[in-house]
Image (tube, rainbow, N blue to C red; front, side):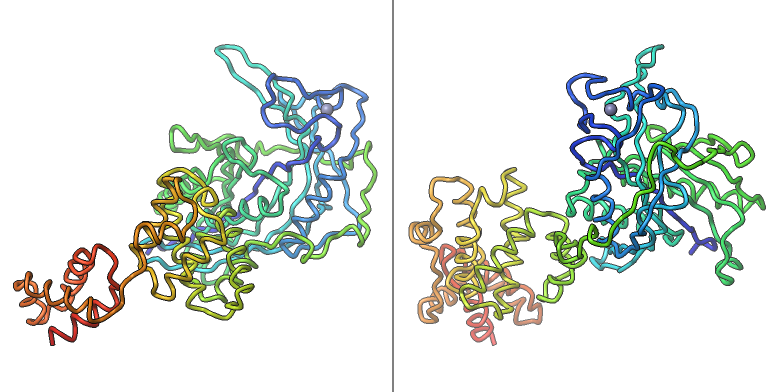
Length: 492
Ligand SMILES: [Zn+2]
């Protein structure tokens, strides 16, 4: 255990998927077929061009605020952040300084420990989230640099967290949850490969005294230009190691901004505190103070079900955390499962907990595996009604695991889509008749004297092998539970 504790705060830029840009009516389109296609005097920074606020962006920012339980102020203001860069021809960016549209809020997440399959709950308090216009994009080709203004003035929300994260695993779990949330709300595609979600990471290390006194270190570094969850994890690990080494040598790391170089797996100092930028923020003279009437703020229950709410709902059904997580992070699975649950309650089986678990197990197990392996969607394999009927038969012990697998394999082949026909053709109704199965058990015991000896000498786990032999002898039609009972009785 290291004597230092990392203290991490994140700033996340999320690009909103509005139809048009934040301050002009140009299309907000990812990578249109040519550079500088969606541009106008405003988003190319022509003097005198005036901003025109996009209400859709405001609505999406407010929805985010409601979803995280934040305060939406009655008035919010726009500010100019002044700096020079070739991708910012106006010489300023319209942002929000001390009066953001979203104040506070909280996001819960789970950190999965893959080694032992457990999940640790965590939460992050948000400081704020504000709206701002994106800059243009520079493209370096050989010795030349080109400017593409398609992205210029696209709407961003910048989400700022409190410094409450303490490991790369927590930070990664949190941003995954944030991505899930904005996608579920439908406010952003949050595709990191397209730069629609980007991270800056503030980090310092607390020594033991600071931990005891709950005190922040007198410095922190900000690592910028992180474009994926994996890079975020690596940038944090890099910085923990770099700062730890300096502290071990009695040095205090410099307060500075660093740039993450993903291809080199390291960060480089960009500027220190002494030459920190002074952005000379001042109120944007070309935009009014934005008043947000209380009627404009949606109720939480008018928004799509939040991932955290869905997670709780599934856990209450008795699903394992592993399965819950699999469902919640994949819309296809959760909406399939929800439709199956509806069918289940129409069949007056809403309270049958075992059936719920069987449905969840087969969906997250055999069906999901077949879908990934064959690269087809679950709905292309089976519809919700047939799936429900198949698992119901399984739950009633009329077909076994192998039968379920055979049905799924046949469905993937695609010749027959009616599960009842497949069951009939492949003779999948399992035999539970103890007389018929008893004969098979006797035969298997006779043919495997060595294994039987091992079982009798206490190595009881070999019963699995014997059940397998019985299943084989019955051509997969025998009920493995009945085989197990018969074997235990006969080998006593
Ligand atoms: Zn424009």
